[in-house]
Image (cartoon, rainbow, N blue to C red; front, top):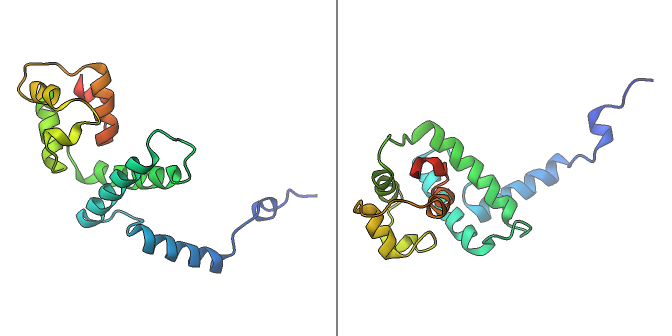
Length: 145
């Protein structure tokens, strides 16, 4: 007896039901594939909103949506965003500019006074801050160290 076909071993969604759910999901989310700068900007804004809602709760029902959009954004960035080799403070300045952020917008990573000292070259980026910045900008923490 041959092995059962993959579709008989697992419950497979009905294509019509899947289409209806996908169309509704896309309408609510606003972007499901990042193919342009406009899609990218919308996805990043949605990610920021979801980060505020989900926080550190990996079991939050919206965590998977956050992961999904993160993959879409990273794929677009890998192709379209070139991060120059630079000193950590210059890289931070570049990323802030690309995302339209001010020092106070990074309060989730470090106090504004610390961000100011980093940007002015008076303070090195600690491992803790590097990790927070890496999560914020979806890059490797090694770029900041």
